[in-house]
Length: 210
Image 1 (spheres, rainbow, N blue to C red):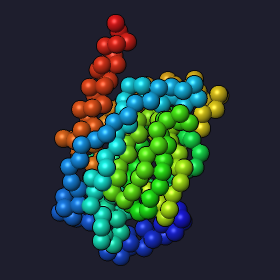
Image 2: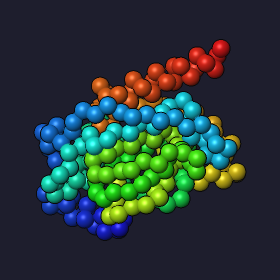
Image 3: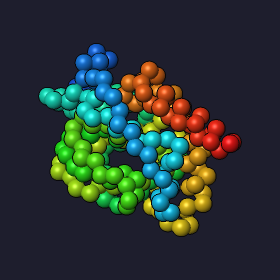
Image 4: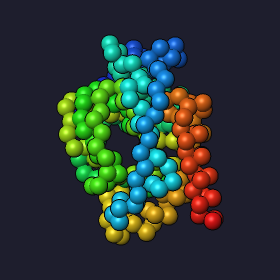
């Protein structure tokens, strides 16, 4: 699927037929209040005790779009979240210790678990967006025709950790050093993410100093 989507995207880039305009993006986004979830270190997956996972239920209107993945890519990139990819979600637990990640559901449905083996199961569908702070475990449990667009904020670096003992000490340090981005990948600078994550960071720092 990844190869097919890469070929498709390359063709679209050459002919320029599906790149959405800023007006298209304003039409296809709608304001949604986020659901937030926190996960503790479970001894294998560090998760992120400072920053909550943010889940927007269908903030994107994708019905009828010829290439919904392109619209999601353009939206994320316009808000400073780049290095976009198109694929599914791995069926094994993994996390990123050096960057946050956003997942936008372009097509299909599925069930994913976030927070590791003792985490929370979410049902996902087109238009949903999940923002994972660094360290958060995630995996796909079940999917049907699922296509996801992922992206990362600067200045993070992609890494893939699977919860092994030899990566744990380094990952615990890396997770705490990933900065909070200035922009929400869906709503930009005025979106909920900067406020939620910066407030959470300040509370965490005060608690640590007490």
